[in-house]
Length: 131
Image 1 (cartoon, rainbow, N blue to C red):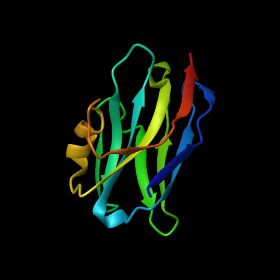
Image 2: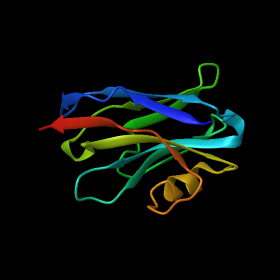
Image 3: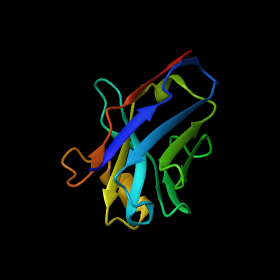
Image 4: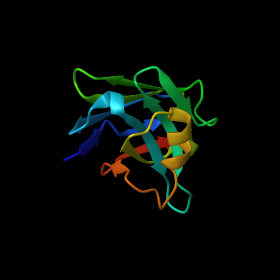
């Protein structure tokens, strides 16, 4: 059974950095896409960053150049390093994974769909950025 557990969320000031972690179990990394999406109250879900097979990655334009996604397959852990955080980054961040996915760019779009099927999701970790 797939289980995703996020950690690392916190409250920081604008310009600060955070690293989110997602401990995954029940996943064979090479056969899954993994990634992060976020949702703030009253706003649409947004795919933030996704990765497949450690090298194929994709980012939302709003975070490109500030966020870096990576995965440590030996530890079955997904990371999201976030720099130069802005108040508009405030949201609940969720880890997600899908089997049989082979393109990070496609998953970046799909993970944001409310009716996405066969996507495993964690419980989320809150990131709050103050001005």
